[in-house]
Image (tube, rainbow, N blue to C red; front, side):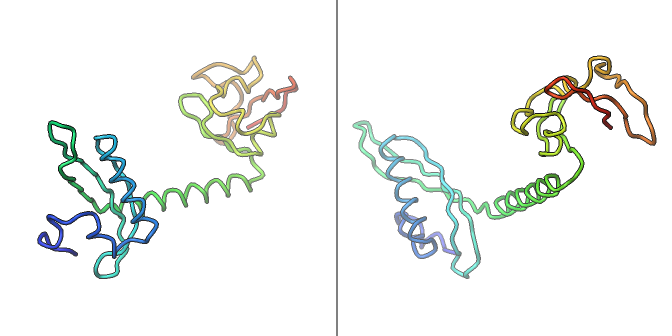
Length: 178
């Protein structure tokens, strides 16, 4: 909402009315960091535009130095990234909802990537005698009875699209699984 004339030649204080005191302090810290490290600094800050609408700006702060290493000025480029931030928040909320549904399920639920467990719910972990965190990264086939471990060729019986196989608990006990 600001014109170029209102921005060019002014310091970071030009945006102060649009951000909270906390974010203004963070912006000034980023400016100081850029000057001290003589390198680009990035930071995000939530605020309101001149019309009162929420914005999230990614600030790219570039210090300019002369041959003697003295800071001669700053270039601050701000991109409105509120669309991406809202999409990230929505994705996080969906992931949290999915996690809650998975955790409340009486069924064991596991997500795999190329045969490795990337996430499991507590029910799944308990079925095999592990904590959920212990199973992350483990090969799924190691949780099957050795007679049922054939990569790419699941061994077991198919009934209505469900694979029936034999699971192997941490203590060595086996159990029917699907």
